[in-house]
Length: 139
Image 1 (cartoon, rainbow, N blue to C red):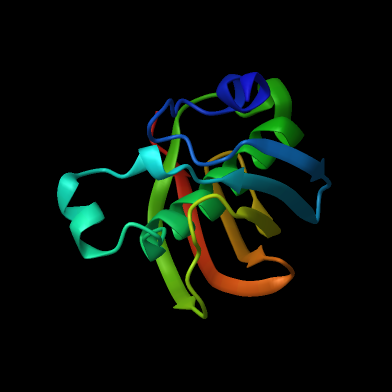
Image 2: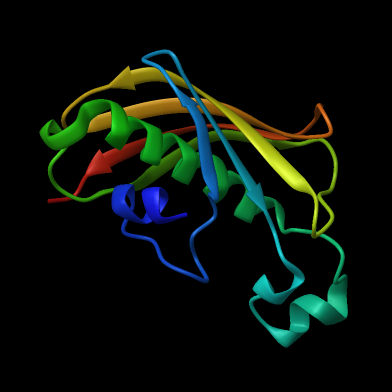
């Protein structure tokens, strides 16, 4: 997790990538295991304590892509990047807490001011969520 903290400004409880498994110019692969203690409010537990919210999965994909892009670009990726737009998002299945989510992110555009990516989140090789997003450099 220390590697991810060196690549992203996010910290617990809002850091949604545990490990980067591979990083290439075309694809970034990472994982996250969501723990039940990461629920954000008591209302979440009342609704259904067993499932990770869909938008958290999209944020996980974006963080995985951002960490990989930062690692690829090294010191040339100065500044703070943030999620600027979600072009599409689809949810195919739920994710139970304690399951390993594998994220495969495709780099569509890697620039010094704009990063555009798409990704799919899997649990046990079954797609659970997918999205396409754009991040921009804010500073």
